[in-house]
Image 1 (cartoon, one colour):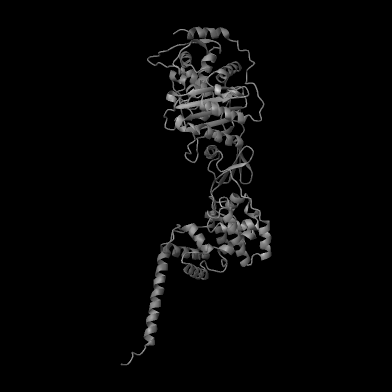
Image 2: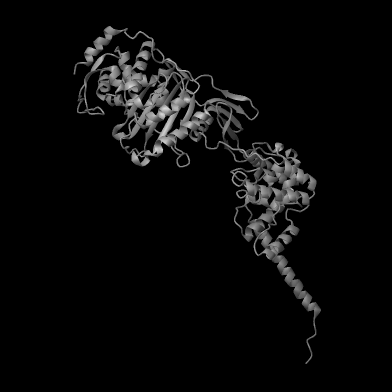
Length: 619
């Protein structure tokens, strides 16, 4: 039987048909993915980063940088040649010759990965990586790779090679929350890109493969090994010689920058929250010089943790807050909670709670302004006002006591009797004068601190007692500069003026000194004249200690976010001990001073005082 004659024309025509159909299929797939590409609305300008806000402490040390994770936009012209060479040698040596897709690299990667049995080498070009970063999601699928290739070709047709490389270097993720070589250079080395050594350039380039794995802050050994690989690649690509490599490795000095990322996070949040109201929409980089004392802030955060951690279960206490002010209203330290990572709610600024007896100085000031003196006496006995029967904390009553004794021992019935005499409106007016802005109760319960206020508000209201009688608006920003160093804001004063007369200031300070000497705040004694007031709200829901010297005013609050009561914690216990530690630290380099008005003659106006005393003695 004869074999069928081989028909070459038939064979090749069929083969051609197959190739044509494959070609048409490829064209169809390409067109399909081309027309299903994400919308491209892109320009060089669209890559410009959002403004960065750099926050400095009172000594001009950076404590936080907020804003875009992208650093300063770096053009190829400003890129050091060593970084340029390192990136191309390890990432894409044929970058300047391929059309966006390196088919040679793809084929090489295919065989390397096939022989290894798993993926050990990628074939993506810098242009493809940029396309992925700009337009696509990170999943690994065939459809995404096709779109990535098409977008890479689009980028090559619309931008120059230098523009593409510049875009890539300004957007690539390099670990530690940084995008772009500028941001990463500052994060890891504390240097601008232009200042990088060859070794540092190689280390930065090595991060592109696996930023977390080769992060020099967390894995310096892996980072050094990866850097050696990059340097060998630079030798292989002809960018440096072997002799130069030996010199580079011998002289390599890597100083990893340690950033104070967690210092004063509640404080810096508070600073940021004020910027738009001060400047309007932020559209440029800013440098904000603040009032924070970094050393005192760190100590405050440490003390809050130490003094409360053992009490969480024992005393059913889960939160605390602290404020330290200088006598002109500058906020030197602020702790808004026990752990910022677990709760960013700032209890020192945004939480409003009942201050209890910590509000009483303003009640007693109303008595002084009505004509009484600290050593005048009032009856401490049960009181009934239309069915309301306020009681003392101890549930004990001592008969006639002086105003000074009543305030230092937080006797409730005396405060209520004062409020009944002068009226709630008089107390509210004094509170407003001292800077309180919160809504105030217009009934006699105001005498017991039932009106909710913030810790910052309450602490600030004590400042006039420390500085000689001038009320303040608390502040944290000294000045703001733009990216060119031009000062666009400078604080020029935040005072509310004089709010208390010299004799009344003297009397209040005399009375509040007793709190620490032999009153409810005995745990807070420090090595200098100081005065204070404790506060405990009903059912132990809040415990406060607000105290001051002539130089610093500090307020401490402890409690629970849900308003539940603590187990016997009063203002004279945990808060007083925290206050003492903080104030000792704050006064490290300050000599002791007398409180304002301590030498004033306090026996004036006695006649009217006795009149008021007689009125108050009548029930």
